[in-house]
Length: 278
Image 1: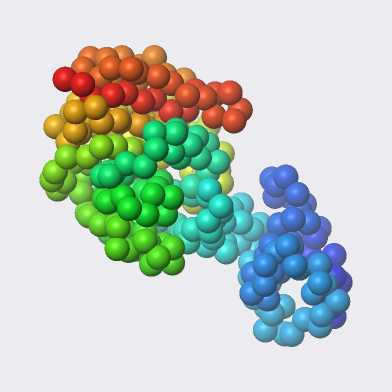
Image 2: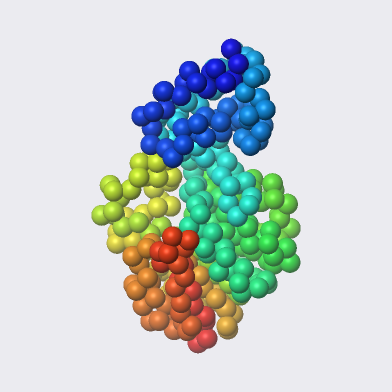
């Protein structure tokens, strides 16, 4: 049996899975088995499938049928043009967060950057790669998340400019920074059951919800950020689409100026930023 025949045979098995493109999913999974780029899978559709490859492919199909996201199955996710390693211990980096990267890059290169709750390192490591002369500290409360970030740090060749630190927000952080960034858990507990199962079933719960009103992490970060920012430094956080007013009020109460909110590509409120000038 060749790959084209196998893909057609298993296609119907994924008909019950919520997906934008079944054939795209199948191509990615087949390419993962063959260890080739998915864009080149067409060139291999007439290759013979070995028994070992068939078993591996069917295992991946079973995982997809459980609604596991493709990224968590192949443990790779593309973010800002780089392929990040991901697993069940880190939040799957998504396009919405690229709004935060774009906002940071508009500032121009920053010397000292702090990424709070780094997870896979998607934000902090991207900035380290874009600003190779910067000094980036990435923190997380999860050792397993830091292990993933460490792998990505090595893969991207940015280890010289990055420090990884286990910390509960600012708990173990020392020094001052020109830019503090975070994508904290902002899903309110009352919103949990309405989340897509691919999210709440396979991203770490601790990275998604504060088990409260969705604002508790912002209260901690915004209230303490001034103690760690240089004068004129920036704080930027990703927010839920309905949290703009509440988070901007926290920035204002803490003494930040030039408070703005930027939309994502879909036009939804996504990034709140402010300047520390107290």
